[in-house]
Image (cartoon, rainbow, N blue to C red):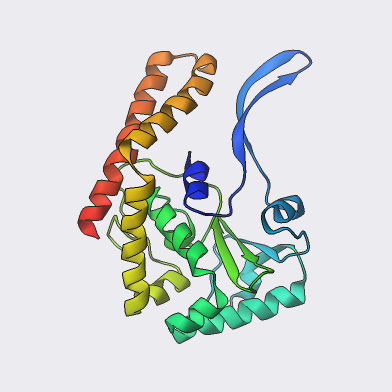
Length: 246
């Protein structure tokens, strides 16, 4: 559901579905099938497989941190130069300079999405579990979430900021929050996402669709129903709590 919601918010995301895995005519049960971030994914999403793709695990756009990113695809020299320029822009704290090196539509979707999903171990709050892509169409970095397993645990999850409505520990989001334009845009993007993507009726329909797939494989229907109700409570209550703080 997390990947679905991010995709509908406009995020270049990985395809994600369920798979009934069978080996030697024996069913091993239901698994989540998640598209890998590689050259095939780059070709599908960006129309080009020769693109810089890097993984960020406790890595950030801080000057001198270029080696913290792991190159997965593309040219190393191109990646290093683009990283250095982006880090310089972030250090300047200037909104327009940051905008020149990052696709802010994508960045704000990641930032708002991670906050709504209570993804405490994502880029915005913990500088981990994300990929960056140097978009070949504009030469800007796309910051994309990954590893969305630690999400939606509680409606009242607070980030290192001490707030529920904004995750902000990474260099780029801190720089944006320090600018009037960047801070105002975050609040606008957050409230828009809550209104457009987090409507209760749509979330209930989405949950029911997933339950129809998962239920035949779960050994305890009472337990599954209770877990689904808990998740639905988080999905519907968290946006309201965040909007009150925004």
